[in-house]
Amino acid sequence: MIAFNKPLFLGNEIDYMKKAATDYQKIAGDGYFTKACTDWLRNKAAVCGAFLTSSGTHALEMAAMLSGIQPGDEVIMPAFTFVSTANAFALRGAKIIFVDIRPDTMNIDETMIEAAITKKTKVIVPVHYGGIACEMDSIMAIAKTNKLQVVEDAAQGVMASYKNQTLGSIGHFGCYSFHETKNFTMGEGGALLIKEDCFMRPAGILRDKGTNRQAFINQEVDFYSWVDLGSSYLPSELNAAYLYAQLEAADLIQEKRLALWDAYYTQLKALEEAGLISLPVVPEQVSHNGHLFYIKVENKKVRQDLIDWLKMNGIMAVFHYIPLHTSSAGKKFGQFVGEDIHTSRESERLLRLPLYYSLTETEVVFVCEKIKPELFTKPFSLKK
Ligand SMILES: Cc1ncc(COP(=O)(O)O)c(C=O)c1O
Image (cartoon, rainbow, N blue to C red; front, side, top):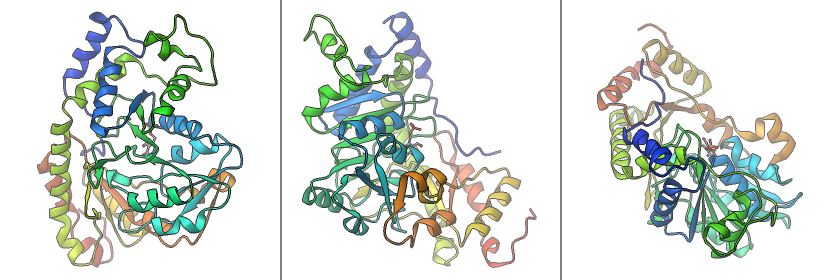
């Protein structure tokens, strides 16, 4: 059976976790490995600060609080995204304004944003689907003109870039995920990237249960106490140690994933040229990170038949987000503005194929061989 995902394990992770427990004798957060990961992230993204968090969801929640969201504010995002993108802002009382996506990248359609802006709009949340960047120049220009903040949901975008700028470093805040499905992982975890220095202290307080413990660690104060609202978003050193082993090998991991992505693309290109499927589009001046590979078929029925067919052949393939505006919570906390021309249709066509570090190119060949042209041209038959 070819699994859909296998969490990355290189080998050094366990040594580093052991080191945290024995050499450094620290398994709560904010020890050697938290700092090592933080420095790596800050340098990679060239931002003024990074905070490791207990999930990508928590990074988004911190960004929602730091951007000062109040009940009744509006936040613009695509409906084709993970629930956490919306939840983080809805939890602060914001109304979620969904706009359509572009069919080529599955990212927010930047030309639809301006029409959705009202006096109540506070934040735009571009989501870089599959580590392929949104059209950030346009989004940042719209934000500047309308005095809005931009929170990049770069959960899938670590090590990817837009016009040589690392994803997560372009907006006011950037949010990464290190969940086990991501290119680099710590089991459950994430990071918040911060562009402006003025948010560093509030972010530290927010992550550390509303205390100024960061200032205490930096020897700026003699003791720490409760100074503002906050929660517990700091991950354990054990998770940070696991992640650091992978960040150290980030180039190697990225190279392998890109090779697998390219192998899929090359082998499936003929089907696209024959007009039977669509492949992902990577716009010019965008470098992706091989986070996921999808194909788009004619409709939901063909997709389900293909999922069943691949499963019969020992291959796990899965669809992705069900557009949030069609969900019960999406209806309660949000509203779609403009017309849903692409979101529902494109999401129903999309099928993700296995892609993870330990997948082999031989397995990619096997998967591609099973996606035969006759599956799309004849009445579908689930025979091997
Ligand atoms: C686009 C997007 N945003 C947010 C998240 C949430 O990240 P986490 O699972 O680390 O909380 C995910 C996770 O899959 C995601 O894909």
